[in-house]
Image 1: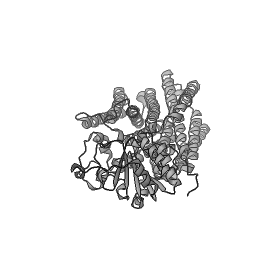
Image 2: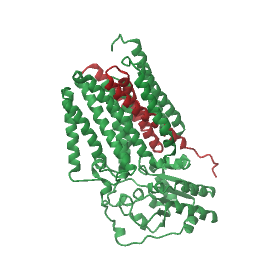
Image 3: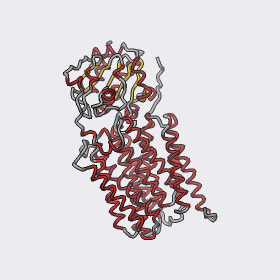
Image 4: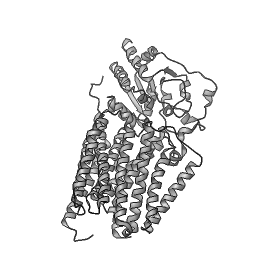
Length: 469
Length: 98
């Protein structure tokens, strides 16, 4: 290291170091709900320090653009964004997070492009490679996130869009983009290679997200998060900035780890999610259903009685619950049961919702205390002693075919063992198949009773009935 | 390859390992806030944006930097606000257990 580092640079590096520690400890706070808010406050301090340290940078000679940018950005974030963040329902969170990804990635992309314009042919191959990755991952994240936003917000068709040779075409495109990146790195004067690569990155983002269905969105959003982080890291390599490298790497691991967890929870590989176009699969019919076994119906009155006299009720909420906006009605029901001395547990499958852990936030929003929420591994052993398993708007995550039927598209996916409960009540809108179009033999099990109707209306009915039991 | 790049790779890999250790301890209960938090701190690209906006490399550079500062600031402010809103909702049971 240069022993004659100017004092100003030393101060900046010291501030960056403290900032990095703040970010790491801040994320560490997320290991429990009690410390999480404090942790995020610490991370915010880290961000503030990062800005303060950067403002001392020797290259910064004018503050007018910076000040204007910070003010406008904060204005958009706080004044226009704040009411949005306060009133937007938690079901819509995934698309807003996606849009926020896009904003961050636009910044990374522009900085990379600007640096290339500024350095031109003077850039070293190492710097050019970093800038290439920064811009390629940046444009990919921008368009991919906007696409994900469009799909989740239902501006674009949520169903997978597919066409022949799609995967081969995408891979080819990615390969060409990488070749261009190498070309620009070896010879920085090939500016056409650099800009074509940037455009291909944007095209890839669109083409990658188009074939992905709603249920696979958690993986895609996590992956885009990882790309945005890696793009920031690449910026750190290009600008010689360790803080960017560290924080980008933290983001990258967070995104990668979450996408791997999501893939595991669906028993599918990365490649399968990205290239499989899962939602388009027709789904095979299982033998039990093909033989014409009937579903057994239960009336709300009877269901209320069964619930009221149970010792332990395990509730399995699926995304259908959130679609019906029935979380509050469900919380009322479980509170009523707890007042009668019934023990209630919520069983949360990792892929319930449209982003990792989404169902937990949706229930927390409805004032369900978090000590009632249990992960799949924690709760699966409890189904054997449960008197009633109440399944609401969930289908694939409770489908026993995942355990027994190798022909099923969801075979091997870890599921909630509701079929081990003494009785299962399934609340379902109609008699049709689930989201992935897969039949569920749980619904025709002799121990299962079906309560048809809109989840919100049925739950409110149960609350009323419970009072008369 | 010079020493700076070697040190940068060290920093990158070590930060990744620390990230793995820290993030694998986050319970599934908080995975959505985690994602939102990670999103907020992606706004660290603000650091590069500030330098671009404040440098004397010409007005195109300033303009690109200016737009980048706006976008990154929206990302940071929005990200932290959303995360805090979510985390505020996680409550322990305050009613007495029967």
